[in-house]
Picture 1: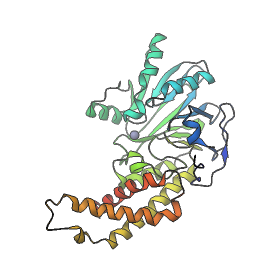
Picture 2: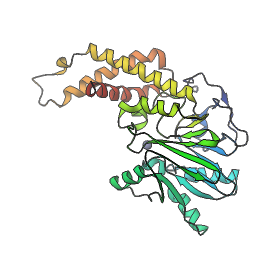
Picture 3: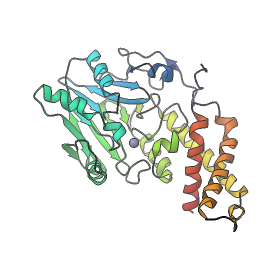
Picture 4: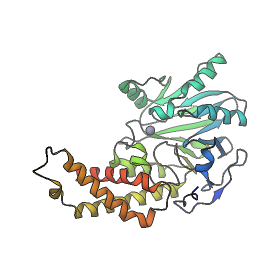
Length: 322
Ligand SMILES: [Zn+2]
């Protein structure tokens, strides 16, 4: 067993509690070890709870009559339903799709079937962009039946206002967005950031690194005290600032490595195809960048596994966007 990784932001860690609300900025201690054993449940506010198991995470809101859940992450939603049942006997009537990715909605039938068993139809809220993207990719999951306007709209759930803040130029997916639970001061934006960890593989599986920092700044500027990122610990603005600083350092390290490795030296007239030239150049740049950042970030959670693919992504983005 290795020791738990160092916090990215020098966080204050606490034991999880399903009954006591969390002081903004505090984080769950030993989250990786805990969540590999089963669900970790933390009460964030009077009405919002956070649940993570096996490195997937979501939140739910308990209203006077019923429960609103965000996403249905693959493989863990039965545990989320179990966590809800520990907190309240009110039924889940509504689920929000944060974005169309299958790994965040694949367990939707856990909630569809439970509603059906009560003789009700589950309300699934999503943006018009999510509906469009689900049709485009041939998603096998039920599309939202309460569609709100992209990129900015809101809906009411009992007394709660939930605002959609879509990223018009999104890094992660075309329909990527942040969902703000206004009265609770909680924002939910899976795959934007893994709080208390350096950026995950390819910046949390994003499609376009180019817009990553801008999307982070857009969320930072909203009114909230707790951030739910779909993975990782409970987030604060310090986590966003950490990611922005990390990206800035990585861009600088990649830029320096690009200056050191002349592309022409990766070209060989004796090769049988040109195919490896760009790949080998990017590989060399990424390897240098990972080495350059290791003294500052190397002890942080998952650095070695995540940073090489992130550096490759940054290198290609910088190559194409000049
Ligand atoms: Zn995703």
